[in-house]
Length: 316
Image (cartoon, rainbow, N blue to C red; front, side):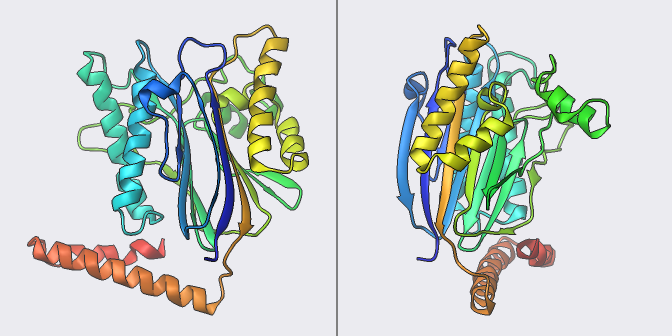
């Protein structure tokens, strides 16, 4: 195996009556009865395709829990059934379907479309590459060679203000409207339309990379400089995840606030494949195999050459 990851997750209810956070840990997540208890997992994963995500639910009458749970349940189904889960075409379709299913929770409870929802911050790792998918203000960070960068950009009101130069990033962190998000799983859509997530290009992995996925229960309370220091100085993924969660809880206590739910995933890339010519050939052969299967299925279904457009899906 050319990909080896030391992975850890920690989800904590904080000082709230319910935990609307959930996580997807390469096939594992919290069932409804577990969510308020929280969860901690640490494992070394060697599969050459891996998927992790944080979902932060929202909505009254416990609908936030239902929303984030629905999202992670459907992510597992997607990972288990999709031939190429890191394909942007398949991801786009899957996240649109998840969003529609989350919106169905609102409708089934007699509420308006979009009344409940969830964020999504996800990373897919495949041998020598990674790509991220996100909606909302849960985040993915990368610590590489001592430099921490935010891989995702929040779908939020204050992020728009930052982009337009109205406020600085530090002002955004303290802004009273920092929790107003502009997009989420389950948001209302026009008839026939589906939510389009933000999907990054595939990027190279490096041994020594450390990724952080988190809900805003961490980033609302702990400044990015402190997050970086913890990621830099705490050696194991499990200890880093625990340290970050407890830092969020203590910071909220110091500010005399009721701490939010907080969920953190830390991924340490122990070993990654190299994108040499052989790797490229293997990746192309896998892609061609998946493409052939998809075309055969379309032709067998009587759709003629409509499947031709799928030719580009693995090149994205």
